[in-house]
Image (tube, rainbow, N blue to C red; front, side):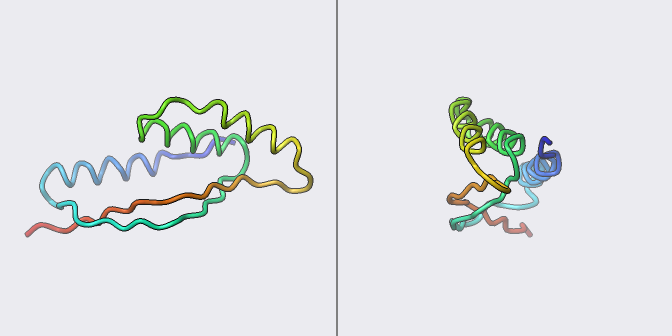
Length: 95
């Protein structure tokens, strides 16, 4: 099952439009660690593809292959979990 990221993409576009129209200005940001359960291999692949596009990174097929191999070796109910820093920007309303 491929993860539906259309809501995330629409939200990103809405924020970009609001900032571009001068309704908000970018403020400070906070950075903290996040652990996200992405489900199975297809959801991981969708998450990784979107991340690579947004960050302008090359494809990471090698990482998908590595996760697939780990899932094949797993026993019982296996989940894919990603962990890393998240940078969250704060928007301030103008006016």
